[in-house]
Length: 258
Ligand code: MG
Ligand code: MG
Image (cartoon, rainbow, N blue to C red; front, side, top):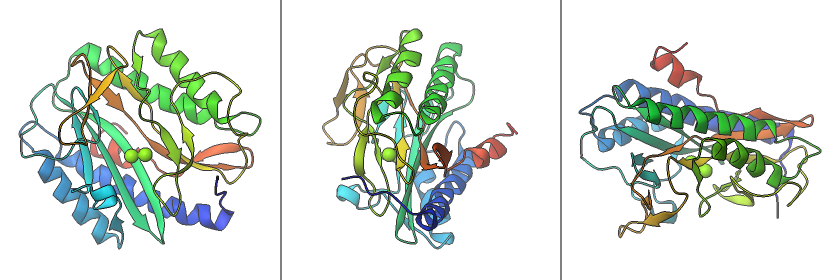
């Protein structure tokens, strides 16, 4: 059952999402060759708590950390380690926080030092997929129109769209209805209505769409070992179209991109 939110609830959700946005901005400042995912995790936990919020992933389904950190061929759900990042790596940092009883959940894939052009392209296209998915999130469309548009865009470049993991409704729990796949056919699923709040999160692989799970029972990796990218925003449908509750602006500021 989809839980539609009031305008007041959406404003509270924006505050929760912005806790995560600011946290990813702090993480962005620390990303460089030599830093470890566990160091990034500590920065994130402190930044969330300093804002009066609670880490949203820590302990959720028994996840052990504040961040999911997924490096190179890892798609999502990587557990932070003490293995230093290396020049040319990419790392998806996915972060959740709870404020006012609502979850924020969003993610960005960072470049570590200088990254190969074909990997830069993967990141660029995955971010475009996220924006295209958000544009499709409007009254008049159905949920599957989001995934249809994302898949069309990713496959133009020969990339694989992960099937096993999907976006989701978000609110007082991290994962609510509906599921929001990054693939599919037009015109399926629920009609999009005002008050819908969802996390849109394309997971796009440079090679095959197929993935495996590591024996830690968390980390998802590409079946062919090629890199994967992941970007995620929380959005709400207001006056017929999606508005972003989260923002990458803190990240862009930290990276000197704005
Ligand atoms: Mg997430
Ligand atoms: Mg999510």
